[in-house]
Length: 315
Image (cartoon, rainbow, N blue to C red; front, side, top):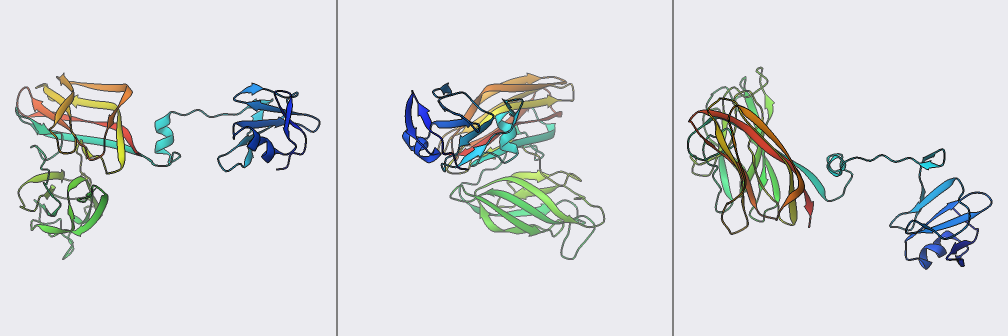
């Protein structure tokens, strides 16, 4: 685009071309023009002549671009910030959605996860053990259940890593890489059943300490846990939780900063009810912080689910 008319700011000509006007006002200028006249606006204040019908804004590379208008009114679509993140429109931002379900909560604290115990946190990155309680979850030789499983987590530097392993039924299989944290597992390929036929559990290297599990037929793990990767901050903007057995449970959102202790940030009690909480001022969670939702049954064998929504962004 070329604009060759005079650009006026506070009644003073600051250039005869758009780049000159931009330089003169330190990138805060945009111009509205028609065939006969031109107006300059600085910080939304009119400082020139009568407005025309075409609007041009200046991007960070000093390039002018048009804005659609209808009846001389700018057309705009306003969507919530998190919608823009979910659509991938904000660089350096990633949506975080954590959901867990524990179908058999004891009267002592447990992670909101299918493992029905407190989650194991390796003190250092270690090779994991993965096995099912059903022999048909086998990829070598292939069988009718889950054949391969994908795992996502963090390495010793708190960087996101992934791995894919081939199942061997009830026999534990080693991960190909060492994990410091694990926060997701999914079935990638199956046999005729199209799902995992047993519960697939991810253990620490001792083949006994439970980290997470894929419940029978679910094809992915459900755990309200997360660890913020290095160089990022997570923001928790929404909490949801439900108790469905009429036995009642206490829900707690717990956070452990790097090198510190777990602290209870929110706590609620529910009996055969649900709660959805929109946090107007999202909770910031620094890098390398462990986050989990824990549940404690008021009576044993309560059925609970819940989690949170938010995002993480580059520091």
